[in-house]
Image (cartoon, rainbow, N blue to C red; front, side, top):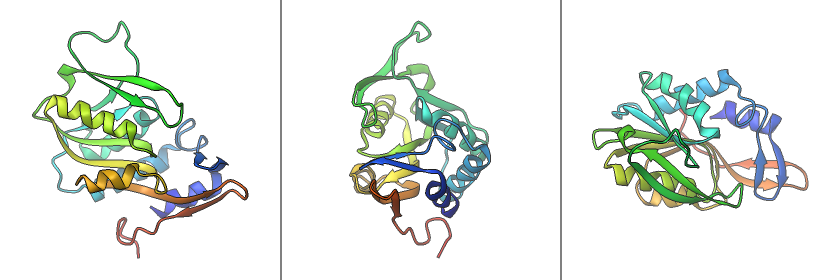
Amino acid sequence: MKELEERILRDGVVKMEGVLKVPTFLNHQMDVELIDKMGAEWARRFAGKPVNKILTIEASGIGIAALAARHFGNCPVVFAKKAKSINLTGDQYCTKVQSFTHGKVFDVIVEKDLLSPDDHLLIIDDFMAMGAAMHGLLEIVEQSGATVEGIGIAIEKGFQPGGDSLRRLGYQLESLAIVEELDAANGKVVFREQPGAAGEA
């Protein structure tokens, strides 16, 4: 998605090797118009899939998923929580996830009455690096018996194995921008060409 790539080049910040910050438009402050266009693009790429619910993980994925849901018939958005609280009641699907960004292990939890074998899910998140969070969500989906119709990622770090490993498993994974190289010395970002993915030459 050229508009997202251009925004990353303009406003993204390469902090160190492997770290790209996009706080002014994606995961701290949100550019609602841009994210709405991202939702429309995912709807185009997953056209014909019987998506009836979107699944994401707190916190940065929630706003993106909520705006994307408008383009999937305003379907519900379920977000996995990273910590137990008194607001979580009843039976739960649980797993553990190693966070690349925070260097910590989180419990990931979804109440059982929010996912069922009748659900056809699109999973959405802001970043894909090693893929640990996504594998955690997929484990929860497997526990629930629901069907994964696809995975939508805003920014994939193509130089890390998460995205390609999921593609090898057979998932339709649609990343709107795939970063192949981050050069911290000069702030350079290089994207993977995705011919035809977004209807672009």
